[in-house]
Image (cartoon, rainbow, N blue to C red; front, side, top):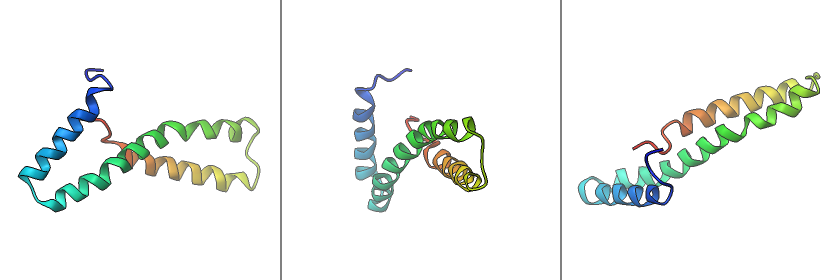
Length: 88
């Protein structure tokens, strides 16, 4: 990766400062809400597939199809929310 983990928050902070000084406050509000959602979405999309393993290992029974479908839908939502996380 081109950015070390310690420089990424500083870059994000400078980007937010640019938004505050150059653009509308509404844009700042959107960024303040969207950034944590991207973070959670990205890491949820990474972690959720590990929950499939116990379900698939034991075989899906009648009641587990709903759980598996809900996990798939939740993973798809997490992928959509987190798709722009850590992009410059």
